Image 1 (cartoon, rainbow, N blue to C red):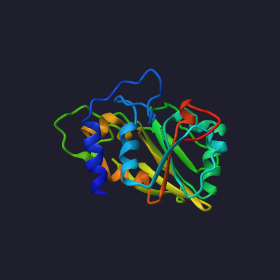
Image 2: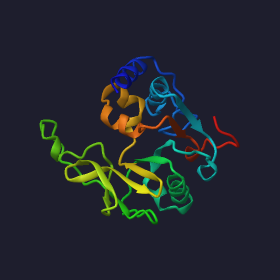
Image 3: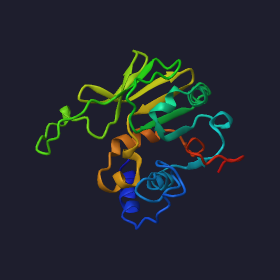
Image 4: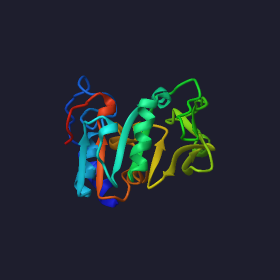
Length: 219
């Protein structure tokens, strides 16, 4: 949507108040460059229902929603307490978008997902190289997935955006979190990625519980 680009551009031009000490990187509550508040506000302007969730994911009563789980450390994909609620949400008819933040030296294999997270290979440092097909900079991880996964985007032959159907819903994985942060929305917006992540549904939920902002209710 062109309006999404316009709203994002307008929002990130505003002076952002720092809230970095209160919320983890990727939080839609953070208004500094490490947060995703501009993305949240942009989607709120272009979609009928955009909200934040503070309930632990296993208790989220979402249905046919696009649930954004931003800023997940690679090592967390090893943990059943993180992977299992994501799987359950997808099977219940939701589309769950999970973004990786940071890199892990070990290969990570989320249980029952048939996908592996690998640390991206080191890139040669050359500011004069204009061949983006050979550049994986900005993508700390990439995915090695089974044929059940659809590769949405690749960089230098490595899958960095993938999606798979789980019963009546799906899980989408993005190999970096920075494209959703206020800093990138200001300086280097990837509109195609932002629109794809938002999905085509009427309800979008930004999960805050996995970032430590868990309460007994949802907003």
